[in-house]
Image (cartoon, rainbow, N blue to C red; front, side):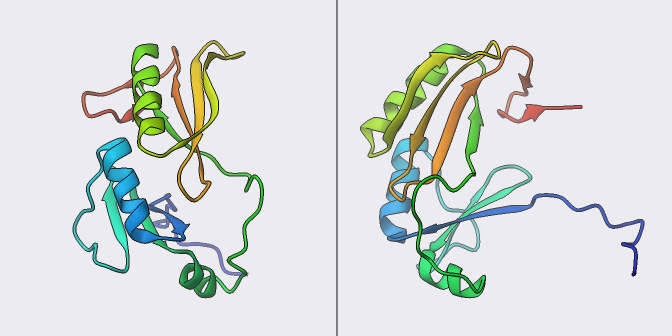
Length: 148
């Protein structure tokens, strides 16, 4: 068996969500989170630069075909996406903005067992997102998580 080269350092580079209606999802992410599609986006796909990771939206049927699986979804997929913020007030504010723009409340903002503060929402396609504040994580001026 071949070993990966020493220069190979796998990183998470792109997260793509399969969506039923690309225009509806673009509108949701623009209005709820203030994200605008970036370079390379067109009427078939939307890319969002997340500083080191690209977040993408793509129609679910061709995405499933590309991955050779069924596009059918039901229940919890076992994956959540997360946005960390610098304080509890920002969690409350963003959660309210998302719900006002079509997000579905899954868990309202609440103190956590691990000492933080968080909530969960679903986007129009039912993808689960967490918004949290964690007292032990720092963010830089651009909102990037500082991690060692």
